[in-house]
Length: 99
Image (cartoon, rainbow, N blue to C red; front, side, top):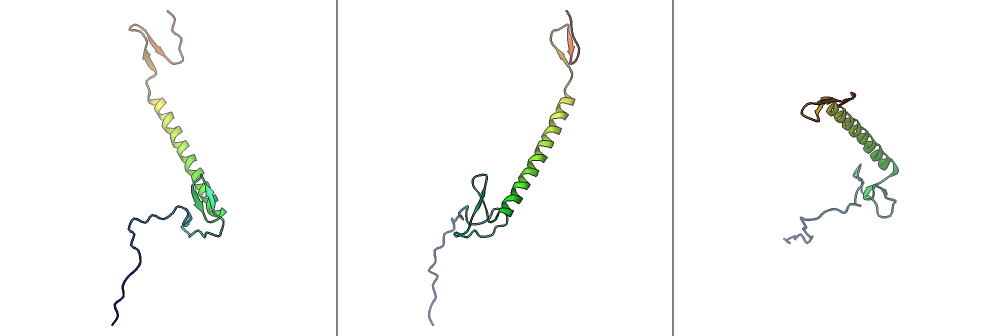
C-alpha cells in the first residue's frame, strides 16, 4: 500500500488580491476580461454591478445628509435663545438692545 503525501503549500496568512473578485457579487474576475473600477480601488465584473454599487452609495449618502440635517435642526431648537452679554443685559435673537 502506497502512502499519499500532501505536497501543496499551506499558507494560513494568504490574503486574496483585491482584483480577484467582484466587490458586489463576489464573482471571480477573469484576467483576460474587462474589470470595471469605482472610486479608485473597487473592482466590479460588469458595468451593472458597478452601477448598482454607485446607486447604493448615493442612496446612503442621501440618508446620511438627511439625518445630519435633522440632527442640526434639532440642536438649534434646543439651544437657549437668551445669552448674557453683560451682568445687567439680556439679549435675545431677533431683538435690538439699546444702551
